[in-house]
Image 1 (cartoon, rainbow, N blue to C red):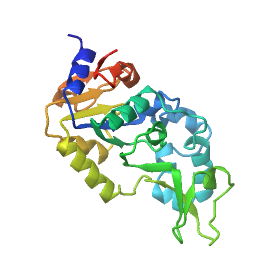
Image 2 (cartoon, rainbow, N blue to C red; image 1 turned 90 degrees about the vertical axis):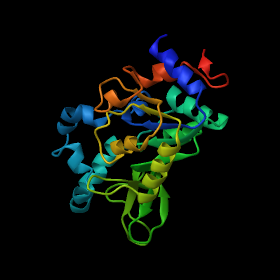
Image 3 (cartoon, rainbow, N blue to C red; image 1 turned 90 degrees about the horizontal axis):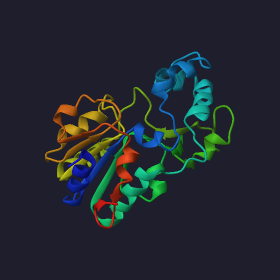
Length: 245
């Protein structure tokens, strides 16, 4: 039996599935992983992406922060790929209970997923730092310089910057879902960014599947490791039957 069939059989026998995903899920929709192209970005910017997306840089250099943010983090015309779509279908079927994502692009919701726990927030939401008024991403994408609310406050994206903590409510919900899962699928993440990667420690079952092109620090703990693109695995899922197409 090949490994993808083993995965499909595990999925067919599971009724409480949780998916934990990273940048590799979105790269298949054409969204670049900025960590893999730092050199290209540094040809245009004077600071590395990790510094420019930090809380301290945002506070000290807001003009430069928003220039980088508009240029690199706001994506237009990008659509969900097969992984997003199959996950939404599995949720509608009742077997997938939650999507936990490190991505900030909102593609899971665009594909139809309802219970999405966004560990790092979303570019699709913004808010005023002074009065708390909520805005869509156009408040930043269609403005210039530092975007301002009608009250005069700065409008910032609802994303977690470096040096900022993750939402305790989102983390608690993610821990609960992972603890209760009978199958945990981890896809498109190298599992090196903490505290997000540490969530895997809460899984108590025996169907931990890691799908990633490269090795991860937790490969030895997995029940099944698939070294391939996540889309090549999810395209094999027949949601109605739970078997290979």
